[in-house]
Image (cartoon, rainbow, N blue to C red):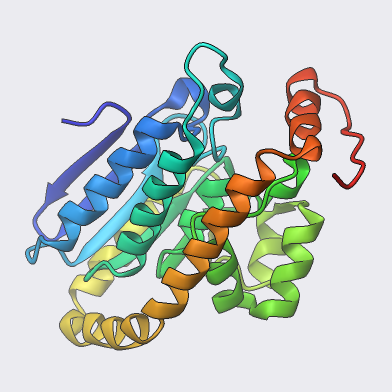
Length: 259
């Protein structure tokens, strides 16, 4: 059914896997649309109570597919891409299930935004996390501004977005960006143990609480997603973005000029 992701269901647990391991699960326009479709499918599935999100291969997700952005043969339509991102971010946040992100390896850019959109984040102690849009002259998308603000407040969100640093898992945990830190190779198993503990809890009441809190923030998320979309389309036409992309591909430090 899907080309770039896998969605499996076993009893009350659904597992969604980013499945482009050859590209470090970088998200192209196809994956973004498929993620939106998958989350909207899950939203209608009353038999599922926990959704586990993970990446195939050696990493969670490297974020947006920069090589696809640069492809002159089939460049991504940024307007369509932002529509997909808006759909998937909104659907993820409003899922009527408890969501668990299981992180190993790299978790960057849009991948980090989606992880932050989950209710619980489990990460391996050697994983690396980065809200690194600034490095290519872009702003966070996927609700990154909203999800960071929810977890660490607006002041710290600005510092993280503007800095664009790669964080080790222990630093991310201390900053409140990770809920559970586990040994290397143990994230998925630990996330499944957590899911089983949730199934043994009064999970319907927990889901009801999630709905109350998330529905009350729905309008703000929608507004931020609209602002992110407008800003991202604008940033794509800047010289700084083009320089950031070239520097990334050429593996050199970018030289930004503020335009």
